[in-house]
Length: 307
Image (cartoon, rainbow, N blue to C red; front, side, top):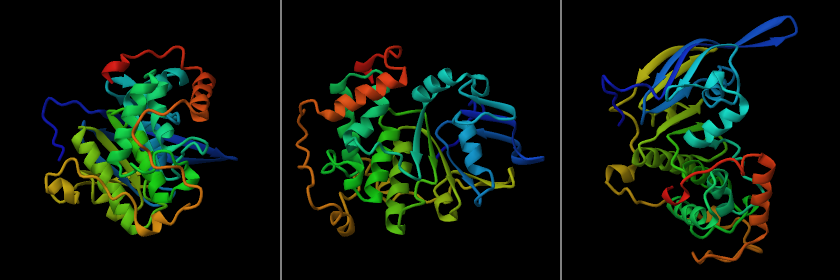
């Protein structure tokens, strides 16, 4: 459970955030003067109906959209003032993303999709492959590492998305309607997985949802109506705690698959991953092309052995 101290500074600080869209002669306020502080290691939910502005607010925090006016400060940096290239570097360093539509690259296997954030960070192949394998196993996908998105169920694809978001241990993970396409059973598994990982890694988790049940996992709930924060609910002490966290089983792993998931793409499935280093594949070539086309690969340097 996240509790701020008197000396602790917000991880995310927003002041007077406004976003106006112009439709003909009409001005539409998607956000209308938002003030918001999110502290390190907090799990926060932005709760609202469709069109309330919650996703726009998340996009602003992630630097995916520019505000009409207002200030967005993350770890002391004014991201609203950054150009696109600096924003890309900042997101790579500090942020992970989980999307409702999964946003996996269809021609890459699970392990290569998960490896992408590390590839963009300049981590060498052997290191990123090892980390991606470990993360996929933690997400219950040890037997699905060489599968491509079309060979996996929705729940499995979202687990890949979570593994990708957390593999580089970013300080902040943004999750935009992460369970919107999933059934109730899988929704619980996905939420418990994200909460457990963020707690273990001392990360800030920001969830956007319209579902009050999902909001129950948060330390703090911001109710968004018509582009404004209508109420702030302190949920600490009563939020949903993952069952394995209560039992102290930090290394607990979700089930590999449900009976329904096991029926997905039984024909022509790739062989079970052996955990050994495999030779370079066409996917490695695709990754290299992605890096080249991004324009970032030759200019990002990290201490890859320490990641």
